[in-house]
Image (cartoon, rainbow, N blue to C red):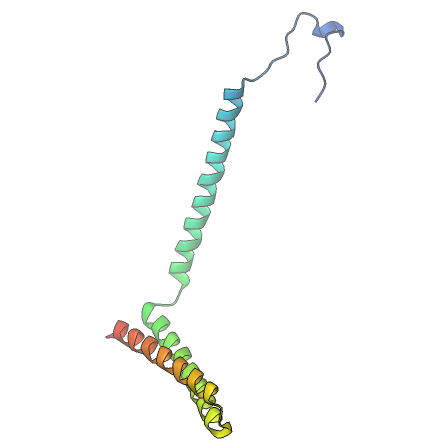
Length: 113
């Protein structure tokens, strides 16, 4: 942007136009409000797409039960390894994980029923 010079002939008699501080703050507020609205619209569109494309509740519960069942099998294998090797810590950790998974499986099954 060109600088304002009083010495130039066409600038003589003109005053430099300035914005007050409150005007600048109002403009900034309006711009941020527009940006925030745009971001909110984008987030809402993303959520609507996720809901439309996402699996149903029953399918989600089924997938979670499948994952919990696989984890239960892995932890049971760890318990057996701990018994075979005589490691008490491994046995306790496996039992703790199995009880946690058992509670999660019960909650998921209750959702279905």
